[in-house]
Length: 151
Image (tube, rainbow, N blue to C red):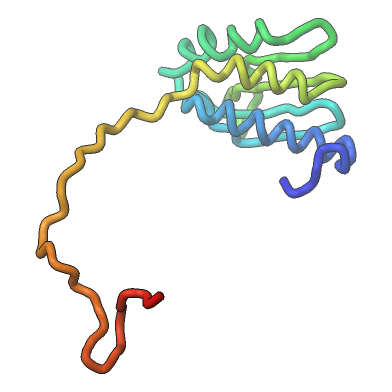
């Protein structure tokens, strides 16, 4: 974001921290956010979690995020149920609020840190370049091309 946080209005600050948290939450590969809603000092993210990831989400990231919430903060992580086209549906909700969103989101990001997949270490194999060992570039008879710098 190009603006400094100090130059943003309160709603923009909430949007900024909502976006940071959403990216971190989705980086666990357990949640897909489908609908973010933002208010001053509060945001609410509605998402999808595959059934096979629910247990992993609850016992990992959600447990650690609940431990990061302090007195005065608001945090709710769970399922919400609703009817759509006459059918019962549910989604996961991640609702965060605080007078100091920066501090709360910072703690939540730390809580999520251990739950993000790490990049695999790649071993690099060095091998010599093959080909002629004589220089292949240089000035041609017309003086064009690469040539040593004269001093």
